[in-house]
Length: 242
Image 1 (cartoon, one colour):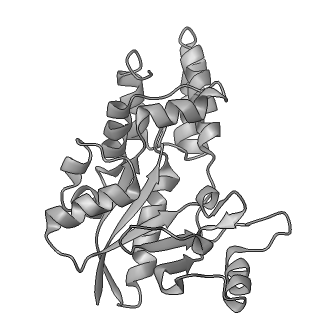
Image 2: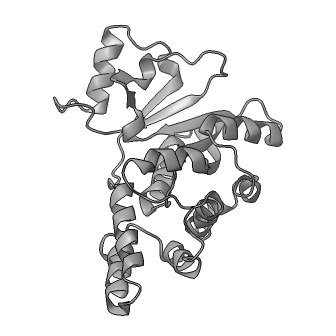
């Protein structure tokens, strides 16, 4: 049985329910046939500068890194395998940036070179500049396992598995053993939509009824945010953004 740690990278501005659901579903799927033992799950949080640059053109605000890390803690507190992942508390205090960097740091802390780093590739990360991630080379990096989740990949509606099979038949996949494709029943949540809701919530400070309705939409109607995450945002609203 192989041992691994699952890592999802991103801005998490803020972390939403499907980020956490993805970690849990991938763990469940990998362990179901007895080939994997997943030791922990982690979110690798992008630095403030990167997120601020990314969102500037959209006129969207950036939650400070310390708060994005704290929000993740709130989101995983009631999920035992996540909150009890090895060195989880330390990972949420000291920032590493990329999923790969966080994985390497964890391997050093765990003192076990046999642990596999499993990096999740979300739908928007599977293809970059028209090139699937499995066609790209990663020079000067140790091998990692990359997990891709079923998504519609292009305008022709070729699904992820079909796209993979086409490239596999054409020998375009450099290292097929370094990829795992999963078909998971996971809701697609746009982080931009979550930020729009939050912006509306902040702009309704003088209207408690409207704020309550927006909170209800975020937590109960659309299930975008964990209630603990929303409570943290409310309690830290004056210091939340850069």
